[in-house]
Image (tube, rainbow, N blue to C red; front, top):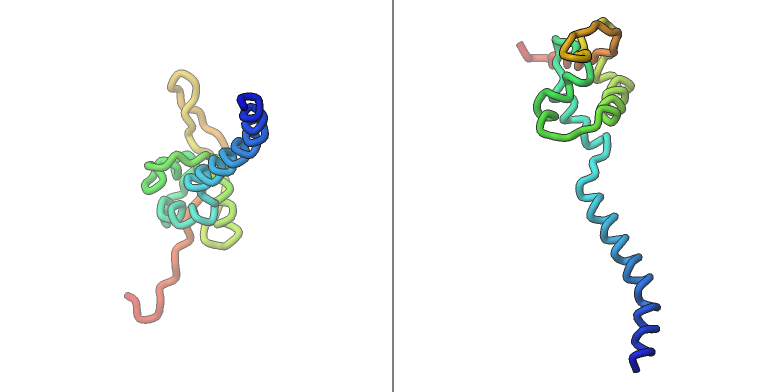
Length: 122
């Protein structure tokens, strides 16, 4: 009887591991955010008057509370540029350098496009 139980467990083990893997993937999707879902938060963090580099956008609310990868943020910003909601250009900005020294570097900066005033609005 003990040998039969061993072989039954040996057959069930791969199915149990596959089930555990599927549960892990499903659980990880609870925390995964698509770039489309991040667009409203990125737009809220951008300014209509001030051009900001990506690392400064990442530090502004509501993005300051989230741990968003800079690459993902740049992908979202570029998508917003293609939609015409954000403009991008390059200018020299001060970046933190080694040992606290600031250095100037050419970097893309982003600004939200001002919404046109609707008729009847002051």
